[in-house]
Image (cartoon, rainbow, N blue to C red):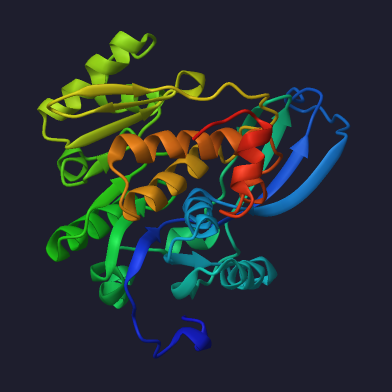
Length: 320
């Protein structure tokens, strides 16, 4: 069902429409992972708003984008908390409805600056292709649609087809990786934005070196993908089209938590691109934004607002 306050709302033009997941992060800091059947003590636990789709929406919104979200929250207290959080962040929730299951959760285990994550879809699994038919107005009034893969691939395919129908560009961030991803739908997207592992899964090519990553990205371009943007951690972001390949270096900062960093990059790129920056400049600024987030704990809570960003970047020596 749909929240009562969203019914009958007048649709406006949005910079970014995110169609995807929301998860409540259940984060435990650990000294080591337990062995199977073992119980170990852990020094800290906290709960926070996360999920790849929501993370990307929040990053774009904090920078000042007009953002709408199509998602399913749970029929529980976590779902109600997430609805309130979306509203507080300034995200339009006319496309967010309440499912029948519990809210999606993501238990995260952090050891140093590395993390392991388990995803429980919950109500996210109820975001079906048919459910998008209630939201054509949102889809056709977006400057850019952003997708990930924490929801059913078929729902993403329906979103891509509707975006093509209305002439709206799509950015697909194929995380988490899924070997069943259909290349025919990838080629309909304006941007395909994997990390190197996800790129290797789709192309079945080695992606250890920059040369190998470039070759794999060019392979997708020859098959019809317009823009391939590969995030390569500390090495930066590689942009490949039929005409050029460009590595935008990352910033060297004292990273303490990488959870949500990739999502902050995607959300920031969506903001900068829909506000008129060319692709290389938007990628440069997205790198700078993501660099700030890894120096702070958490995912969404680590994302700075546009007002906070200049001082934080100056403290880190980032000149964006």
